[in-house]
Image (tube, rainbow, N blue to C red):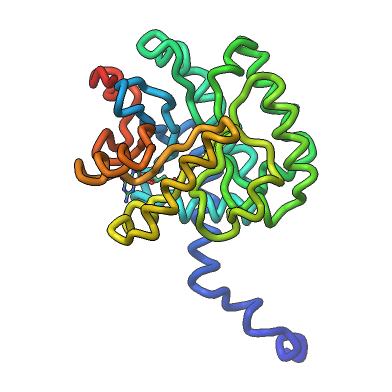
Length: 272
Ligand code: G
Ligand code: MN
């Protein structure tokens, strides 16, 4: 009795959010172990040449008990509960399995996986990725891209840098995802090795403002000057597509070109 008095109510009454997180974590572990996460792909297309540049792999999860769980929720749970590394390796393995079929249709395309800062800060990240690639075919390194977000700046940047440098040496491409929002600012850009910038969809949404158009044009120039690729995310209308072309941004991704689809369906679309 006296003991219960000294404990916080917290110990007996986890909040609803904690219960949910625990449940999601438990189901997620089993979904990863049994290969029940789906992978969909969304292309980045050069709208001038119709060339498929990359396919971005995106994770989707429909659980028997929980229903469809949004990626934002289960990725956050995975990061908080030590499951992001197994989730990341699962995605990598799926993508490496799918790559031969992708290359049969689009021989110069790459497949991109999103990598969390939590994963990238782990000491063995680059080594594990390299091992997975070596296990299938070392040449596949040239067809793999890592998308990293601003979240990497919350972690040990020197470690992250080292991983990215050694993986680029193997032939992988590094893209800075959702650029221009949150921590992924201009002042940090030069601190990471990268090949590609993915401009956040917020810029497209605000494109009616002349200054936003100037920023987009400026980013296109910046990318050109440093021989990096610029991709614009979230292109939803033909007007946006045309305006972006005028601003010097032919490589685009978004619902207008293609929403994310399972690979088999995407291959049947004959993009590009
Ligand atoms: O953070 P990242 O850019 O990797 O997130 C990709 C997410 O954005 C995917 O879940 C995808 O479904 C979504 N998405 C892709 N294209 C569009 C688009 O044109 N508009 C909007 N609103 N969302 C998109
Ligand atoms: Mn992405």
